[in-house]
Image (cartoon, rainbow, N blue to C red; front, side):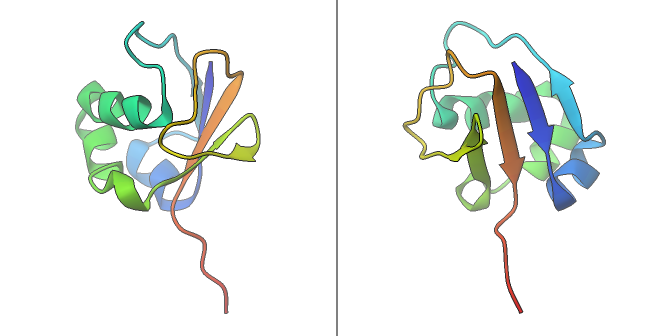
Amino acid sequence: MKLVYFSWVKDRIGMAEETVELPEDVKTVADLLEWLPGRGANFADALAEPAIIRVAVDQEYATPQTDVTKASEVALFPPVTGG
C-alpha cells in the first residue's frame, strides 16, 4: 500500500510517501493511526494527536472505521483551514 503524507505531517515524518505492507491486524484507519507511531519517533511526533489527522483512502475521505485492507493508497494530512 502507498502511504502519502501532506503538509506538516510530511515535514515531521520526513518523507512525502512510502510503500508499506501492513501487519495483518491493521484493518481500519483507526488501526493504521495506532500502528504508525510505533514505527519511530518521527511518526510518533507527527501522529501524536490522531484525532486531528484527516485521512483519505483511495482518494475518498475516510472515517476511523474505514477498511484499509484492500486500499491502494492512504493519504494523511492535517486539518485544512481556509482564509
